Picture: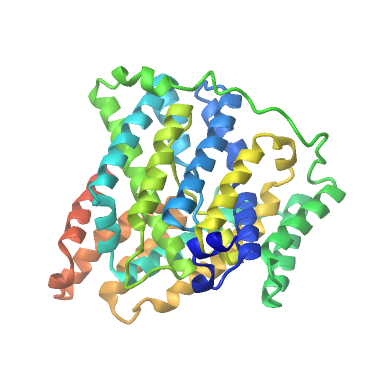
Length: 436
């Protein structure tokens, strides 16, 4: 136990086994919905949902454990939302590409991902982002997470006239979210240890008592077979032989690249792990998610990357890789306790996401708002992430505007060469994804 304590620098990070374990559990509870959402989304493409469930659990576990052991960060990995919808609805259903070929495209993109990680290109890009924009990324992700929570909990709903509006408080599910939010607020303000996790548990119990959340009929079930999807990506690499599919590979690569970069920076800022505007061991963190992406493609799931819900575990006090190791092993256990996971509904996780959004928004105070050349790109990142429903799109808005505003302020020499490169890269990124 002492070796583990020393390896993860518990004393230096002012943490302990109890806090790290609770943080890992909180992260898992916050993100375990992906075990059910991902099979549903990829199932629309014709993939076997049972196999996707298993692939999702194993890929998430592998990436999280590697992240914990190798990179020592409290950041878990899992198949990313959004890009899985692109996989099913745009590539497979929209373009008429088979799901096997789409998986092959993910596999090719993941191999490129590994190469640019080995050559430290991703590391150089993350280090080149100015401190003010890193604070903006953290705050933007916070608003994005809060918006997700408000939406999932029914507090914010679609509105034909105004795009979004306030949800109905006559809905018992929405009221359950409000209960969880109020309880968690009180526990946080009273500085009760593990407040977020306790709030989740109390919300789950109340939900079952009032029958908003179904009571599981059993606790244990066998893990579904991987056979229907395992290895299909490798078998169909030869199908990547058209310009259209090359663009698909590039899209998988770019979206995962920038989503992961933004998420890693934001979470490291939240945890207070940035040093001199750099993320220590960032190369190892990038290697962890690259490995998970390759493994995920082989097993049968869409791109894997750092998961933004890791912020819930960080908010509870997770500071070391032990947090993500706990999360990883819980994903393995989740293979056999899937009926129990059904208790963790949107109403249970929504309050945690909203609270985390509040905590991450504290980065706003560190941005130089009085300098317009800084304030404009920072603001575009912050509002862009929730309003476009995409971390990478919000990042693009800020990265494109930053060199322009700095040149206008006659501070162009302060913009590093990599930021000018990113200016053109993000213009291409926006063009590929949004220009029809």
